[in-house]
Image 1 (cartoon, rainbow, N blue to C red):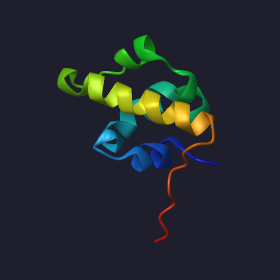
Image 2 (cartoon, one colour; image 1 turned 120 degrees about the horizontal axis):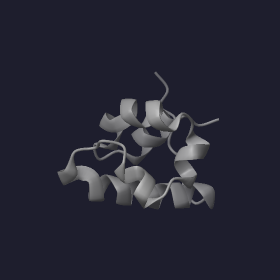
Image 3 (cartoon, rainbow, N blue to C red; image 1 turned 30 degrees about the vertical axis):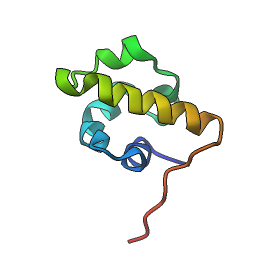
Image 4 (tube, rainbow, N blue to C red; image 1 turned 90 degrees about the vertical axis):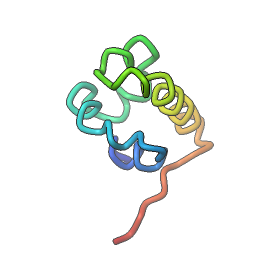
Length: 76
């Protein structure tokens, strides 16, 4: 099972820095995958990053739901 943190880390490009806000407001990955633009705007992400972050989250959640993409698991 993939967590929100693994999903955002897989997306990369600075999206994972917003993990605490998304985890407290969304809760689990299934809710994040069905969240759309208006819901994502309410998560207090800095304005200059909102459109870029939203595009990435929406793009990768669509790919993840279609089984076209899966975040890489990094073994430590």
